[in-house]
Length: 518
Ligand code: HXC
Image (cartoon, rainbow, N blue to C red; front, side, top):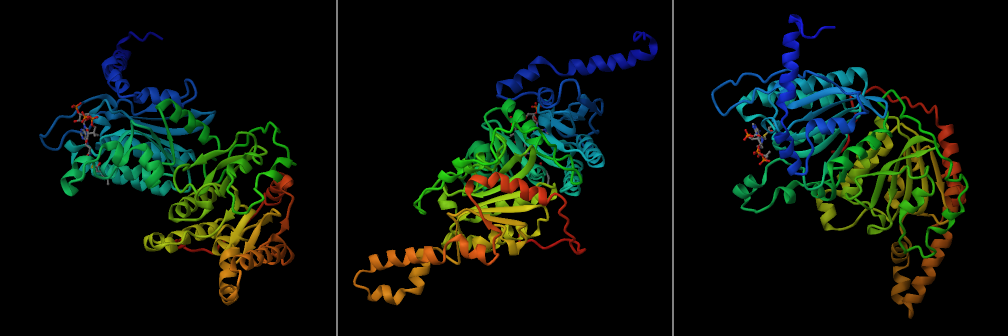
């Protein structure tokens, strides 16, 4: 084909115009801030030569009134398209900070909305690579309505296709709500930040000095607010982690997650599991040591690692199939459930339930965190979220009670009467209304007060309580759990249980939606 002919001249001219649009100087500006360009990010994300860009040549809307200036660049500051990530169809948009600060004008917004609607129609995940100064000031209300359309699309697609946001620069103002509405948020340390109002406004309104990093950097959102689920030190590692993360997820809510081959190196019968829990019931251990001895080798991908860390959540594989893991972490605050860990667990469980991912729970929890701070901040309301999420989930649900399963926490952590499908306990399990110290103090208050040697008496009574009540055998013999198992066979038991639950089907009565305590 002769591309120099008159029919093709305009085509070629446009092609070379867009090539000239992206100067090395622009790229250098991004690189100097430790950031990649939007094109570089897309190239890193997608399998080689699979990305197809659409709407590459659209141009910004005309300014409604004369104020500031509009860069007439092709594409209007956002790359949108589709391609393959690890061989699967994925839609994405990447905002280009080098064009009007990646700000969102109406054309930019329509491009995003178009790709969101396509992703929903095709039942494919969508990734947002965000690097934007927010609503484009020059376009006024049009850009605000553009955001509204994007929010509406995210909400329509929620629970149907996985939606993931990666913050790779600023996300300011109301613009933070588009990532917040998606399923998972990745952030890059030191080069990304999210806040509703920036440091200048904070200074003006509250007379408080704070940097962008201190107000809404990756570490803050990963550790304190819980807005960010995963953070990494640079963009390359963030995108590589995102690609790995996607491999655990199904494309949509009517598909199952992809199955990968298991190298078989984790034995179904693993005697190491007998030695992880310390003899002393008050001694801590790392529940991740147990998880890694049960799931397929190196398959555990932790989510929200730094937030609500007394509860561990994440995806893993068993015989190559994705499972969601929720585990109390005795190493942090003795594994207690507080506000952060409750909301973290609830959100994770709801994601698993929406996307056909069975939930495996490891339980060792002394209860809900007591105290004025937690009560006043609403531990009742937030703890209820975890309870609601477990009970509402209809995917296969299996619990392994490792050690403490006291009181309300026993009920909450997927007990059988709350709809848990299988409940196994290790011989180290302590299942009772409350821990030995509390129980003895209430039941034997008078005797202890009158005793000449209350310390010795308490020790005796605590031992008696453990032997007679706080053990797994009573629950086993009365059918409140399914079986007390040898820790060594835990993987085998879980695999059999998941096989038995393969065709689990729960009919939920029609309703508009439940009313989770938010
Ligand atoms: C138009 C914008 C812009 C915006 C940045 N730019 N933000 N243009 N609308 N919102 C342009 C700048 O004018 C500049 O253009 C270029 O992008 C790079 O910006 P700089 O300020 O030079 O970059 P930097 O110093 O890195 O600072 C980045 C920034 C800052 C922190 C994001 O630009 C900023 O504070 N922008 C405004 C953030 C904001 O408040 N947005 C509105 C949020 S309200 P030139 O031509 O000089 O290169 C919102 C409503 C959403 O989003 C509603 C949803 C409910």
